[in-house]
Image (tube, rainbow over all chains, first blue to last red; front, side, top):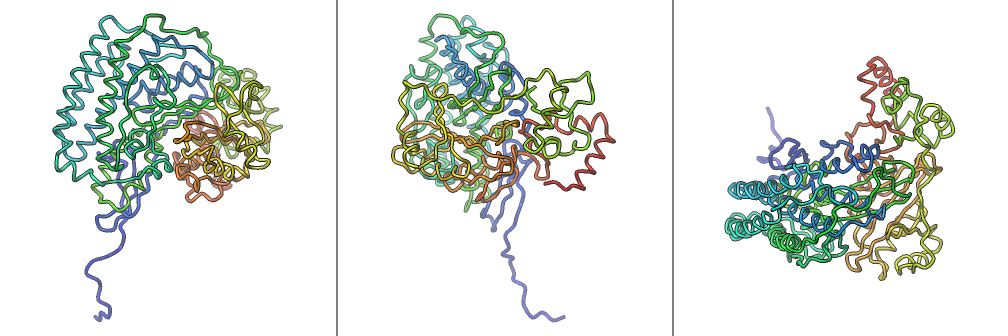
Length: 374
Length: 243
């Protein structure tokens, strides 16, 4: 047998592999088609839709009041902020005045939700990078938040805790003291996470200068929430377009400098402190008064359309609702999911990095597939 | 129950369940009622079939701004900056919207991004609304935000069925997936989009689910109740090879 051209010892072909949809580090049913050059990622194509339940279509066939519980099922680790965004959009469309006490309760709930969501993010992100202790710590503290939610509205995951026009129930007696006690506990626990991660050499090696995106690119690709702020863009819907009681709260917006994974971690860690600060102010300053505005039983907003955004834990959560003025269900119900828009930046972030960094980058953008796919 | 024009239900005791016509169950949106082509027929069919559902209004309510409200600088900048671009200015519950021709959608978006007084550098959302009985049935809606000047505006264009809109992916890369989703859900196509594939539905899905004439239950209900019809419909779809 004659061999005229010797076969190269190593193949230099690019390898296309599937990561997911069943992969523990993709945080759900996310499928990534990765094109690899050795261990380096040349290109990445996220394939989504495995959890598509047609919530937008379904909502267009439900009453305005029934949609609140469908919004729970989108970002199911941050159901309260989903509720908040939706009810505020309909309130805006319907020009309903929400009582001040209800707005304060909503502020407390959405900040508690931010703490719970960030805790889960912190735990899973750290576990992806090998720090399993932080996952246990995160879930341990998240349990306290879930207990508070359970006492307020009876549910632990899908709360369905807001109504168009106000809040369905008032805070139970003694709840405010428990919330303040939780704030103290959480404040004490934050140094524990920092001790485990912030100057942990392995964690820093895995996150510093990984997935760097500058401010202009971050705006252009539509990043929102903590990833956008980690790139140094001062953009927080709570500050820019205040809703609920955020205009009466004092808090700072943490910004990153380099826009890498480590900065995104630091920004979220600081957001814990700011959230606790807001919770304390809102609980201590909780005004007396009614919790429900004047809303008829059958909600039929006048014909018109509006877009309203809030700062969900994952970023700008927007609702675009069109009413035709005749029907009891919206003519068009559109969600602008923050995870979807952040996930879009993933290919840009992972190019040139190692496969192991893909795991870190999926974690850092904090996606929930229920929201990406709706 | 705002399903729009739909074929007569076969099962009279379930008036609310939209049933695709037997010949079109496999791909309801494409075949069942392409409303722009069959609008008079479909509307006539819908009236006796669904007396409960009120006929959808022919178009969106674009309220004119009140006379005493000053028009913000970024709206007047488009009006004066791009000749004949703004068909209508709308204002409702605090939101400003400009309605522009579909063919000039990208051009006006670029103007809004680059003009010093506008600086809409952030594309919050891009979506569509279906008004099946209207002549140009889709509203393409872009919600823009300026991170520097902190103001919002909506840009709307009316798009006919089968009409391609210039893509805005060159202006905001964020539009890439949003336009794919609009294409997936409504069937609006974009020229100049780098990668116009389905976003959420499987790649071989037929029809566009977010259209008003697409049945809420999808083709599945017919499959459960009448497998023979479903098989026939699928056969017909394979032969027609639509999409």
